[in-house]
Length: 267
Ligand code: NFD
Image (cartoon, rainbow, N blue to C red; front, side, top):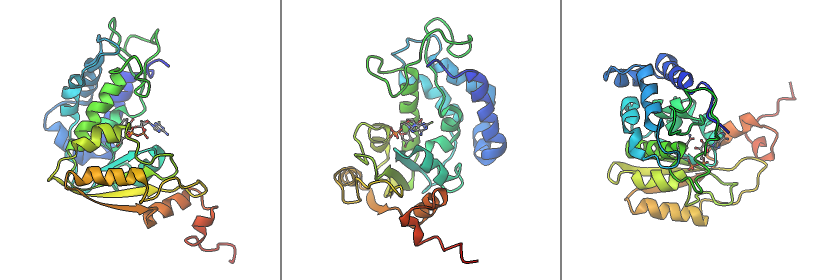
């Protein structure tokens, strides 16, 4: 598919939404650099406009990352894999905890499709005449604009984490911690030893789905080992109470939810 229509307006509008309603406090941090939302949106587009489609250097996003950078409180960072919808329900747009998509950088770009075009600034010159390679389709086009952006943003987000981090993974996936995920490749290696002291692994087991990996499973053991090399101690919990309540709020009909939901037919 081609780039998301109205890319520049969307990116600008999301920045305004974030700064006006979602997280004005974080924005005070950003606006001390006196860049407004249209300038930030321009920095994003300039990172890949007129570039080679498959050869964007991650450093081209440096100025955009710097402009949208804001403070993230210690103990709030959440990394995830395979639980896109649920993790964002859990973090409540940064109120309970903070994923990359709850920061200004990630919020502005999440779910957008964009690509470079050596001939024109992509997304500005009307409907694209060519499809955009996505960050999930790097075969033959390894450093496309989306892949380079999410790599740069993921590294940056991970390097800012302090204290205790959370890692939310999917117990129903064949492998809960696959070695080729963005989390494994670009976030975990950038957690700072000495700054991140502890990791809470949250293994989400969706009621009604088979559990393929537990806290004792092979990929979780591998993850704990990788954390230990950075002196980060790890705990792992399967469906802790807050996770289970939220899962059952979404879909109360499962047997796993019976214990926590009182019978409401006895009135
Ligand atoms: P993944 P990962 N709906 O599950 N990050 O470890 C929509 F709209 O394989 C964030 O490779 O995990 N999009 C982003 C979805 C991109 C959905 C890259 C869905 N239901 C890296 N499911 C990002 N926000 O796009 C999956 N996706 C997309 C960082 C979604 O965009 C995060 O800080 C997702 O990111 C996180 O810690 C991408 O497919 C870790 O790396 C790959 O999902 C997640 O990348």
